[in-house]
Length: 88
Image (cartoon, rainbow, N blue to C red; front, side, top):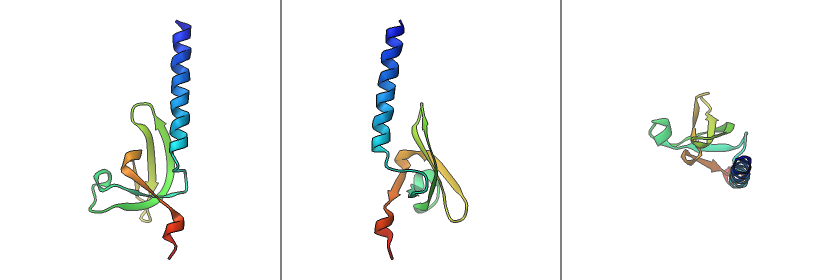
């Protein structure tokens, strides 16, 4: 019984490590939120203020835009913006 729990915990830890490697977004980065998530007409750009792992939904991201609105949801609804490409 105890061995099964240990194996399950090992698998969960390895999945979290893989997600951390894949998840390049971090607090302070610039990202866009999908209109499906926001309910608005276009993508909303904002700064990432929080990233959490939810055992039911996976990685949940929260961004805050320049109007101080906060949008949060599953990571699949966000696109990270490379600040290097935004030089104007």
